[in-house]
Image (cartoon, rainbow, N blue to C red; front, top):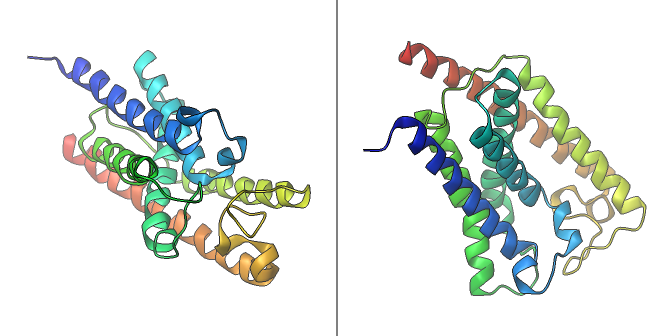
Length: 213
């Protein structure tokens, strides 16, 4: 039988492989070369963060800093899944334009498989139990604010995204399509959901840690 430590490492590798394969498809690496504009998408950034934190957990023991980064990756990957299935997929959104069977596989890996694997890890503590502080809710949310600021700057500097009729990766925050007022309202709504989700994750984590104790 495998020890708990070995099973944890195998699980971390599984998460990394799924995210890596999905990113390879959706960034164009497996079909001729990296398309730099794809790195603008929150989906790809959140999966890159998952690869980073799970790689760190393979090499080092859990610490407060690793727990903090893991929590950020967890929140971002859940948001990735929720926004895709609730907002983007019904709107007919495709990152690379014309959809193919490989794009479907990439979508499923990045938007479903990786989020589910990371969430299962969180609930079961496969990679080790994590310890969060409630102040993290506020700190984690700065990632979202920085991301929005980054999108505005890249659009202002003349950013161009193929297959889109906007300089922004997502229509619901595309200032050039819906205006500042609506984009700001949508951003505030998403930020509120982000913070509420962060609080809920920390609360659930406290309960899980108490149950284990």
